[in-house]
Length: 316
Image (cartoon, rainbow, N blue to C red; front, side):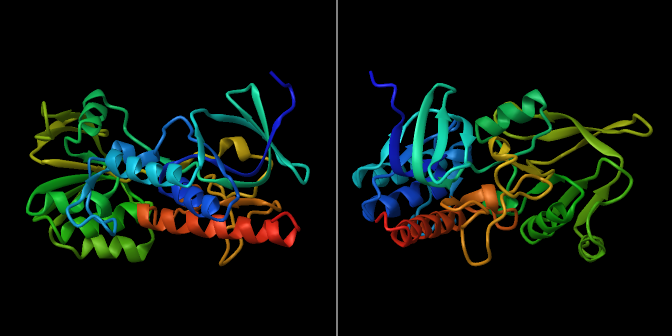
């Protein structure tokens, strides 16, 4: 076996809608892309049950099934898809160096980052169990609120995104409990006013979830007031978490420009990062929309940007 690092023209780090779409476009452009799937092949959607808002699936599709469809399409165009996890990068030179599983070194002319972001959870055993079986615990109101029409739900969070998601749910649900850990919002005044002016949103301050009730689906919550220690029960059939996302970008710290949370910065109207030949797609660089269809769109953009960059370097 040769010790010489493998050299590829286009390396895609991470899978999911962004990575697979980038692979489809890059492969069709004859860039012969290599994809390293990452620790969660298929990305966040593999933890989602029904997906009904992605174009082209009139009857809906489960998240895992949809990712298998996208993967099959990328494979059809001869994308080299490998299981593994990028553990280290060196982006100093014109050729970008990447290590997979700490041992295998790969050199790439262009790199497309599609490592995504991970929703933050409370970490309660029943919360995680019900999330994993599609039992009514979710971190995306826009994705899943439709399934809770006419039902009473609870949402945990205090920032702008939480207020926005509570307002969205209030259009579908007769009652939305908004659970805020502190005695105040972290959101902007405008978003707070929107919540306060929505009659079917009830805000419970100084309130935390102690347990999620239900065997196969959410049947209620045990809550506790963290000031008085008084416990209570909420009769809800859905629990939405809006306590933030963490982009999976730690390995790029010190190399790529990112905001205070870790989302990768890119040039306006472009997927280009601050390093030539390195592009970002999907939720790793999107803290605003975070939808499968927008991730796929930026995957297309990143592949086109990579193809044009290689052509400008005389490498295409």
